[in-house]
Structure formats: C-alpha cells, structure tokens
Length: 297
Image (cartoon, rainbow, N blue to C red; front, side, top):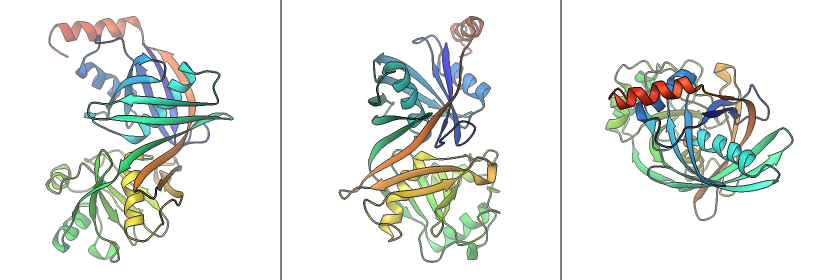
C-alpha cells in the first residue's frame, strides 16, 4: 500500500498542515481498518484514494475519530499527489475526486518545489444566526467572555460541504480553547459540525477537534464559508483574493487563499509541498484484511 506525506497550505516542507495520502487496495481494507490507519498516522486528517483512471479517484477522508463527508486540505493535498503520479511531466492538471455525497474538481499547477492547487466549492449555505443567549454560551464554552466576541458581527452557521459555526472575536484569540465537555452536542444543536474562530481585522483563525485536544493547523473547509461571511458582512469584496492565516499557535504558520466570484461561488487555493513517501508492509494489509473477515473491521 503506497502512501505519501505532504504539507498543505505550505510553500515548502515542514510548514502548513500535514496530510497522509494513502492508496489502499480496492475493498481490502474496510472502514474500521482505514480509521485504524488514520489513527496510526496521527495527522489531523488522512485521505484514502481509489484511482479509477488518470486524474480521477474516489476518496474517503478520516480524522483520528471518524470519517468525514468533506474536508478541504485533504482534497488539495490529494490533488497534488495525483498530479505528480498521473501527469508527471505536466505543468498543469485538472483532477476530480469523488466523495460520498459530492464530486470536487481541482486545478493543480506545478511550482518550483511545490504545487499550487485550487478548488471551486460552489455557493455557501448560511443556515443560522445565533441568539444573544447562545452567544454567551459559545463564549463560555470557548474559555472567553461575552465581551471578547466581536459586537459588529454575528455568530453564524455556514457550509460549503461541512457546516461551521463562525465565531468572530474582538480579543483574546490566543486564550481561546474548547472547555465545554459537551461541545459537539452544543454545535449539533445549532446545526454545526465544528467551530471556527477568527479576528475580522487580522483574518487569523483557529479551530480544534470537538474535544479540544488537537488544534488544526489550516482548515480549507472552514476557509470557504469564512470568505463568503467576510463578503456578506462587508469585510471583503467579491473577487478579492483573501488571505487567511492559521496555525501560528501550534508552530505551523499557514496561509490559505480564497475568493468569492461575482456569482457567489467560492474558490479555495493553497500550496502543497511533498515531504515523504513510503509503503505499508504486506503484513499490515494481511492483518487488516483478516480482522475484517473475522468481523473486527
């Protein structure tokens, strides 16, 4: 089983958001086995690709806890890997990744030492604005006071494939962290899967897994609805290239680019640097297949 380790939203290795891109044999490794591999790699997310033809693959994305229907940085990183494997001499390539509920077309450009990849994610769906009471609950759950939230902007749930509660903060972004033990349930009650904090003035953002144990370095799936939010509320203009910074607090400063077209569709762009590649041993495959046959996976 071949795999690659790439860094996404990074101009060179050892920056940005790490990602493992794995090519399992078709149907040999079941869902629980893929989750076990993601837990072994310990990246924020891992993506598993089943190649159909050059430039086209079915994709499954896992955190160390669960499978996701969509995520941003795994798709960008996977597209760069497919570009390198399927079109090794091409300066540019168009790739398609098929997820369980959607298909994503990506455009990849070869750069000196890296790839630049972008994907169109359609129009953002805004579903809910939180009430003043809910704002106070969110602030407390994030180790903040109500006065730390930005009064000029609403807390709003928005999605381009994965619903985020967007939380604009006025101050104390550094001190923010998830302290509520039932945070996932809180988010679900508002129709959100994850939270994304940001400062409108600096466009720096932060997010974590819902237990607050691991901070994500750079979050493409949150950047898309954030770009629409910034245009919606007058912080940025349509067709403006928006630069979002993230990851400074965990020592991996990253830069995500995005823009909203005149028709409202969102494009997210980031660089991808190759770090390593390898082969998982036959024994691992046999072990995972055996456990699947015995019902463990």
